[in-house]
Structure formats: C-alpha cells, structure tokens
Length: 457
Image (tube, rainbow, N blue to C red):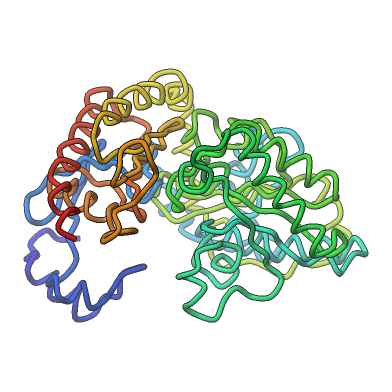
C-alpha cells in the first residue's frame, strides 16, 4: 500500500471503522486507536510511532521463519500470475496444493498421509469436529459424538472451536459449548498441582479423562483433543509421561486421539510436530500458523489412512470452504517449509536455541516476583507470584499481573503476551542468542518496574 498515510489518521479510522480480533472496543476507543504496525524485518516489528520492538510472540505464535523473507513474496507473486485461485469443489485441484499435501505427509509420517486444507486453525478444528462424527456414523457407531477436551484449552474461535476449547469467558459469549463436548482438568502443574509429584500429577490428570469417558459411556465418546503444549492457555507444558497415559486411555476405549498442532507444529517444540516431541501417535492433526509462517492464511488437518478408508465408503464428505487448498497460500506454505528444512530450523531449535532459552530464563528465578520459569523448544513462560517459593497470586491483581508486566515489556521494546499471571513467549525460530538474552533482560527489567504497580493494586 502507499506509504504516504498519516498514523494519526489511521488510528482515527481504526476506531471509526475497524473491529479488531478479541479486543475490548471501548478500550481501543479510549486509547485513540490500535498500535499501527507498519513494517518488520527478522525478529523485529516497527510501529507508526517509531518504536522498534523485538517480537517475542512471532506475530501470533506463527512467524517461524521471521519477517522479510523475499522468497515467500516472490513465490506468491509468481503463483498469482500463473493461477491466483481455483477451488477443490469441482473434482479439481492445483499443483501447489497437491505438492503441499505430499510435503506435510512426509513430516507427519506413519499413517498420517492425507491432508484437508482450510484457511485458519479454527477451521481446521471445525474439520476435525465434523469429520470425526461423520467417521463414527459411517463405522456404524452413530452414538459416538462426544468430544473430551480440557478446561483452559484453546481450539479456535468458531462455534465448534470455542466449544472444543475450555475457556469459560469464551463460552459465556454465545451460550457455548454446543452439546456433546466435555471438559476435564488440565495438566497445569504450577497452577493446579503445586507441591505434588509432577509425574503423579500428570497421571492424575490423564486419569480424569478416563473417568469422564466412563461417566459419559465409552460407546458415546468419539475423540479426545488436546494441544501437546497448551499455548494460549499459558504455555502449559505437561509433566513427563502424561501423553503416554492419554494415548493408552484412548486406545483402551477405542476413541480417536486429536493432537491440535496449530501452535506446536513446524518446529516450535524442537521436532516438526509436538506429538513427535512427546512420543505419541494421534489420529488427526489440525495445524496452521507455522505452516506458512503467517505470510498467508492457510491451515490443514492431517488424517490417518484408517479414517480415510472409512470416509471413502460414505460418498461426498460435504464439508469445505471456498479457500480450501488455495493455490497461492499453498505455494507460500510449501516454500516456507523449504526454508525451515534448508536452514535446519527444527534442529536448531532442538539442539541450540531451545536449550539456550531454557538456560537464559533461569536468570529470572532469583526475582522476587517469579515463581517458575518453563520452556520447551522456543515456547516459554514466566509465572508471577506474590510470595517466593509458592504459587500464590497478588490478591488485588489476580489474573492481571501478566498484563501489567506485558505492557511494561512492550514499553521497553519487547512484544510478549500476558495470560492471567503468566508472561508467555514464542519468538521466531531464527532468533539469535543475543536476541534471547535481550528478551530475558527486558522481562527482568519489566518485572522490576511492575513490583510497585502490583503492590499498589
């Protein structure tokens, strides 16, 4: 777009016409408009007020290869010139879509050899919702409609996505969840298992899934869905052995296992997918974000061959979207995966920058506001407490300590996310050691500045 715009005018127009995602519109109005992000390069974003900000959130958990990748721009332009759009409804498909499906299947491996494309992670989970129920009906078990998920899980913002998720504030808007979704406890050791043996706590959390299966009736349960690491829930890293217990329970009762890899996929945890990091085998894998590094909207759902064989017996699967398998988005995603492969970003995350982040975060443990730091790959979290050695929150600010520290981090030049009383981070996979140090130093400085603010609340 032309660069001769006035930032003040854009902010005025933002308030007058634009409704941003997941926002308090009155707050945006009181602020005089949203922050106008104008350009970016590498691991940094720039706003219209002249600030250069280290992007500790990779956009929104997605810009894995960093900003300013001309190769992706050129691929998009070339594909637009050749074929900007065609659908997959009319027994048709475009070359990039087929090649991307093949590439994803190479990295998921095993029986996960088939891919259904969408434009967002929410749509990928909608696909899971409909496909799983359709599968069981074709199998002759139409009563198997119930999904089991976890409280505080996030699986998208569509009706099905919010229902599958376990965020009560989202449920309250729209009278959700829809019938047929059950929720159980999350494996959040610091928040809900503090003082307990972590491995036993993980087993107890997995056992809650089995208890709910038995309460609902195994013959009624279709699937369990979970993120390998709960991202938007607060970078909740499950205790060792949790996922093996979950998988064993799913197999015991013959229910499908869904690994929501929208955040964890494409190198984030140090393997191509989070389920590979944790050593379990799902039946369906919704994915998005890092698939194209956010350069264009695209998502996918990988489906096991066993499920596809059953789907083949049912005629048309009447599900899909205009932009399912969009050729330009597919071409960019394919090139993005090529960058990740060529630059060894998965291996780098696993062997170098992920361990470096883990070590760097330990510097914050001495701070009186920090109760725990945790990370896996390039996903990290810092827990904010009122009393060292406990998981006690600030009574006057419970749930608000994270946003207080987040705002100070942004002021100090770092974009992170505040989720209740936790600071979370998810930087681009290209981040350097120096940038990791800068990120941790800014969090430390912001914690110092937050202390008097929290005391005053």
